[in-house]
Amino acid sequence: MSFIRFTIVLAALACCAAPSNVQAQTVLARVIDDANGQPIVGAQVYLLGADGEVARSALTDDLGRALFVGVFGDAWSLRAEMIGRAMTEIEAFGVDAGETVSHEILMASSAIVLEGIEVAASGRCEMLNRAEGLAVADVWNEARKALAAASITDQRGLYRYETVRYDRQIDAFTSSVISEERQSRDSYMRTPFESRPADELVRDGFVQQDAGDDVYYAPDATALLSDVFLNAHCFRLARERNEEGHLGLEFEPTEDRGVPDVRGVLWLDASTGELQWLEYRYTGLRRELRSPRAGGRVDFRRLPDGSWIVPEWWIRMPVIAMREDFEGNVNAQVVRFHETGGLVTDVREAGGRGLGAMAQTGGIEGVVRDSLGVPLRGVRVGVVGSNQEVYSNAEGRFGITSLPAGRYRVSFTDERLDIMGYRPEPIEQDVVRGEMSWLEYVTPSVGDVLFEACRDEDVTNGFTRLAGLVVDRAGDGVPLASVRLEFSGFRMPTGVIFQDNTWMETTTTNTGFFKFCGVPPDTRLMLDATLGDLAAEQQVLNLPDYETGRVVVLRLISGTDPGGVPYQ
Image (cartoon, rainbow, N blue to C red):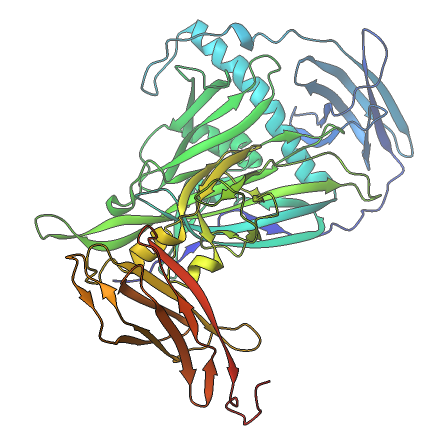
């Protein structure tokens, strides 16, 4: 079987653009609210050439200004637009050498009509009637504004991003996280994540071969706005809204072009018209790679200054292996998914001002108790496959934060039971974005653990179990120590009393643990341990018949240690 390495789709971009030379001739646009005269922050302003094509674009600042430098000639025009407002245009004007031309653009509020849109959409890409076509156009126009603002943000500015990048392996059958690696970064970047050029994606496919490896890509805002993408995909309204009541704008390839493509949904807030996120799936994959779970998601967020960024994204890629089915046939099968993604945890301007909380993560919190309901302190709680571990506090509480949404396997390690070889199976727990899920864990009693430890032993009914730990002066477990248990005058379950001395002997494990299964109850027991010249003080015990078992500690305190130093 050949190993398939999957390469990330959205790459971090860490480049800083050098400032250009400022030319004398300038166009200054100021966008204000026509109702109250206040500046509008975050409006998209486009400088159009004589052919009507966009020559420059910018987002207005906190004073409602957009500045275009190095502009010269005739037949320039301006267009301003923003989600929730009517588009406004300034007719053609000229800019002479050394001149600064200022224009005030009045923008009026425009009622969001998406809330009332309902549609009985077809299941295929086909020509829409006029009413449906207008509805699709309205929804696309609002989505386009957000995508355009995100594209302008990418092109124009430098923010300092704090990002977390993760790579995880997910079991295809249980959906639980098998392993996860994370990498944090804090630096100035033009944009934290970037896709490939749209013409390349449409031409060569959203999954491409590179030296025998499958490289998966996803569309970003610029790609979705491109003519080449729009010409290769058709749009329609989703038949139903999602659980949050968002309105969906679906897209899919217009034809099979013989390369892997994407189909997906742009979800918009129906009350504000703001784009929330894009979710997509891959189409046209090789047969063995096909899975409805192969795809990804790209979130969009409007910042207080009007910029739009991608605060979170992920891509899930299938991993195949050869498996034998119930008829004995060996076939390629998806056995797990490689999911890679990123979170923007903080965004700051060059001056250091924060722009608000970004991507929401989740977490797991809870409490650990013993079999009697008493909170347990010092139990190690971890996420399987990750280096994230915490210990329960005095109230038995624990919390693991900053987890991307997904299904995790949570492990609990109580060292008092771990030394007896008891390692419980991890518990699966789902993490939801922006929420802390609650998990309670009850450790078994010592008697139950000893019962499990002796499950494979031949234990006579009515007899009990004895286990313990042999430790050195520092309290560390001593491996390969000899432990001896002697007793006499014990009663068999049949009522027969044996007076002869009987003994049992065992050797400690690498943690210093030992166990005796089948110990007579209500009998005088003598327990000791030795290792070379070292010996533990003998303990005399009597286990009542109502005890399932008992755990004791033997400390080597006499003789000399392997280095020849006498024990005191």
